[in-house]
Length: 133
Image (cartoon, rainbow, N blue to C red; front, side, top):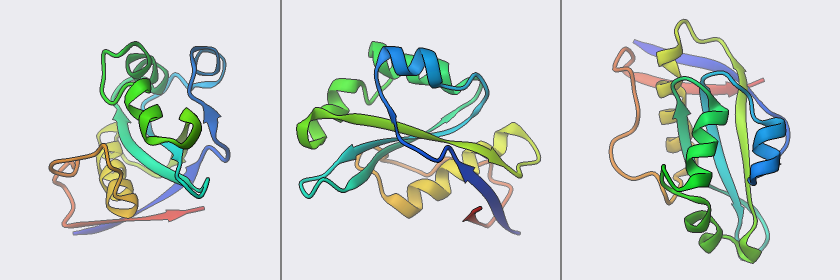
């Protein structure tokens, strides 16, 4: 079965540092992206993650080095060392496990260098697509 999710992104890039994460990161499950600037100063999605419980908690784990990639890994890929994050602020999922399907579709779309291996998936759908609204 094919599934098209409607997603709304957070609408802006947030700095990936302790203050911004504490002040701005959300406390609900979902998908997030780390974004860096490439050599032409264009945004590049470097990693897509799916937070089972809290996007803020997942971001804090990357900041502390408890989860990979950590901030240093990401900064090494970025022109000037700047790292940002954005997240899916809403979607039409039926259950929170479907964040895995959205993360898999985002990885397929952006091909982030820090996402290797099989795509995250619930296994419920033969094909997943996203519509940003």
